Amino acid sequence: MPSQILILDDEKNYLLILEAMLGDAGYAVTALDDPETGLAFLDESEVDVVITDMKMPKVTGQQVLEHVKRNFPYIPVIIMTAFGSIEGAVEAMRIGAFDYIAKPFANDELLLTVEKASRFAAAQRENMLLRQSLEDRFSSENIIGRGKAMQRVLEMVRKAAPTKSTVLITGESGTGKELVAKAIHYASPRKDAPFISVNCMALASGVLESELFGHEKGSFTGAVARKRGRFEMAHGGTIFLDEIGELSPELQVKLLRVIQERKFERVGGSDPIEVDIRILAATNRNLSETVAAGTFREDLYYRLNVVHIQTPPLRERREDIPILAAHFLERYAKENGKTFKGFSPEAMEYLTAYEWPGNVRQLQNVVERCVVLAGSDVIVVEDLPSEIRDEESQYKSAVDLLPLTINLGETLEKIEAALIRRALARSNLVQVKAAEMLGISKSLLQYKLKKYKLTGH
Image 1 (cartoon, helix red, strand yellow):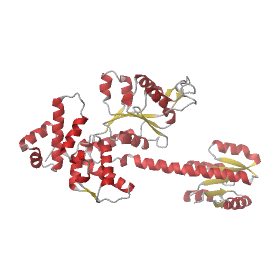
Image 2 (cartoon, rainbow, N blue to C red):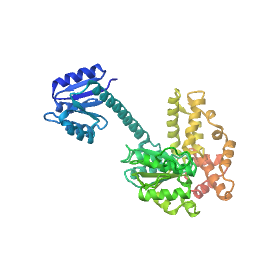
Image 3 (spheres, helix red, strand yellow):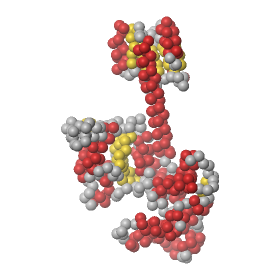
């Protein structure tokens, strides 16, 4: 589709020349000698590039430029001006014109400038669509969860997003901590600026320091050029520090300074670099325990923990499992060119009752596997992995997940509570059926429900 060019000039001869020249070059051209009509056209039509004369009656080229920058900032504006009015064109460049051309102009020069502006407009439009796609994908409305646990998380996201406060997101692996961070960013005033994510556990301490703060040429072996760090890249936007509990003591000190002063030096450098950033951090550790153990700075912990959002494990939001499973089924079916009616009731019972040690990420992987391997348009129990449908495999996988050193009494109580929850889920919360499945009396089940603060009809 050819680029749409709008030309505004009260000199009709120039309009005729430009319209013919750009039309022959393959552009779709609208040429108007009335700038007021041109502004109305802009508001109602798709335009990629605006070319406007600087001096026109009623509306000047600068006023056209200001209107475009205010209402259509992604549209480049080329200013045409007589040779004696170059200073006005330079001022227009200062306030955002893409380029200027002096009259009389060379045809080749004009065509080259329009081509550059057209490419710039295409890139701007693509970036705008990408940002919109990211906002739609990572908005809080698209975080799936109808239960109370996730609604609390979403309420915290909505309250925290408009602020500048640092947010600490905690929760087990696979519970969607980065998704929450992106939802905060894309609901904030910084949504059009970068969102930069760093996994603090993925890199060795020395490499991570250079990754975060950048380095100067020659600061260490292999530093052949200056490198910008992630904090510089996030200027104006948000930086998300995942696995923050893995930072070395040295990096904790440097991060504390960035939070307090919003400035740092590159590795091997001495000049302070100031940044305007919002910091979001996440961990699956209990940072208060690491503070007590002396491995995490207390002052840094309190700087990070201004707003605390806890992402719940999937086993504590079982009412969301059918919704999440249906969502992933639709996504992977579409990706693989397949059609599914859904899950059988028995398969959904197994999914709902399972403990999900890997949380939402594990559920996502299980559904993708089912889509690939299922033999019909309904996911049945036989399509589920063995660790979900086979009791012995469940016990084995559960034991493998436990640490070697545990409190046996507390662990057995947690396992018993989990088994009761599973029985309640598979019996649709009917206590008599749940008791039969567990091989105990209803009165004993009721006692254990009170003991573990569980609910059932």
